[in-house]
Length: 411
Image (cartoon, rainbow, N blue to C red; front, side):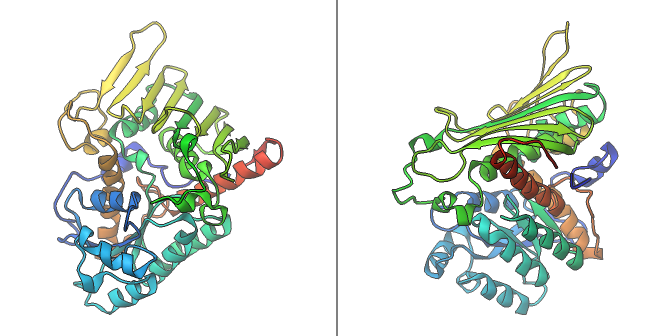
C-alpha cells in the first residue's frame, strides 16, 4: 500500500475547496490561460478537455500542440480558436515560445491529452518550465516514471491534476459524503464494474481514425486495464475513502488480433478489512459506457451508474428503496454535491460537467498558487499526482498478480 493519498479530505475541507461557478478566479481576478497538448484531427479526449476547461468561463485556450504531426497541429488550431502564431509544432517549441512571452500573456497550465507513453515526458518538461499540469489518465506507463513525476511536482511546487472525471459527478460526490457522514455505517464490501463492447467489432488490422495507439503495447502500456479499469479503481477509492492492502487479479485477452488485455477480474482487501471487487471489459456485446459502483455498509447500501448519473440509489433492509435525484435544492443533498451542480434538478448534467468539476477544483488551487505560492500537498478534491502514482501502481500490481496465476500480492 502506498499510503494516504489525494482524496483523503474530511467534510469541512471538501466544502472549502469546491467553489461556486464564477467567471474569474478570485485570487488573481482573471481567467487562467490554457495550453492544450493533443486533441487535433479526429481525437476525442482533447476536445473534451478544451470544452470542460472553459465551461465555467474561468479559463481560455490560448496555445497548443494539437498533433505530433506539425502540419496537422497547425490545421487543427482554428477549430480550437488558437491563433496561428501560438499553434506550435512540438512541445519544446511551445514551452520555449510561451516562456518568452510576457507573464500577462503566457499560458498558466497545460492540459495533456496524448497517448499514455508520452505523458511522463511532457509533464516533466512542462513542470520544469514553470507551468501547472492537468493530465489525462493513466499518469504514466511505469511506476518509476510516476515516482519521478511525484518528485518533480514536489520540487517545483506546481499544481498537478489527473482527469479521473467520474469523481466530478455530483451524485458520486453525494455518495462520498453520505459515507463520510456515517449514513450507511461501516463499509463491508465494494463492487466497481466498467463494461464496454466496442472491441467486439474492432479490427486491429484496419487503420483507425483515432485511438490506434491503444492497440500498441509500447504506447498504451496496458489494454483495457489502463483505459477503463483504472477508472473503476479510482472511483472505488474516491467514494469509499479507503486504501487497498492486498490484491489478486486475472486478466485476459479475448480479442483475436489485439495483443492487450480486454477483460479483468480483480479482488481487493481494503485497509479496514472490507472486500472489494472490480470487473472491467471492452468485449461485452452491447455495453456502451457502463460504469457502476455499489457499496454495502452495516446500515445501508449505495448504488450509482454512470449511464444514469443524476441519481443515487440508497437501500436499507426493511425500508423502501430511496432514489436521490440530483437536485441542488434537495434537502437530502450534501453541500459538496450541491456545489458540484450547475443547473436545476430534472435538467440532466453529464460527462462534460463532471469533467469540468475536476478542472474547477484544480483551478482553485492553481489560482491560489499563482497568487501566493499555495501548495495543497496530498489534500485535494481533484485526483492529484499521488493518486496518479497509486493508479500506475494498481496497473502494475494487477499485471503481476495475473502473471502469477492470480496470486494475492501486497499493495
